[in-house]
Length: 187
Image (cartoon, rainbow, N blue to C red; front, side, top):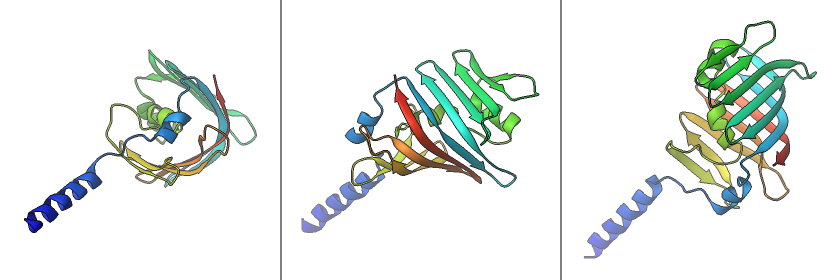
């Protein structure tokens, strides 16, 4: 009887380790606003290039508008996502359209910028409709999220309430995206 109880307890504990972590209350509180603007810095590195610059991201429930600029503030790329798909504007090149940002950024910029996932990940939330694994820090905030082949490490949170991610490292198969949120504005 004791062996059967220990085996049942072990199976329950091991099964508990394999479950997907729920979104914790501290994470929920940080992500209640549907509309926000993020001002910050972005760095992208892969085997072929290393780029850095500024980012201005206006997010609405039905639209994203990302402007990536050089460190001196000159526009390098603008990505707009809406109900019609994704548009990418790069200086001195024709405007490109596609269904999703992953395909478009891979073709034009040479790396995948996962805009759909990032819109959730920068808020310390997993993207809906896709399995994920999460680990949390002692305060209940996301420390690491794994989703859709991406690993998102939350390196620092803001000190104001609600605490929002300030520094993120997003990686997948030889690609590293660093994002620093210098200013969040909820609307």
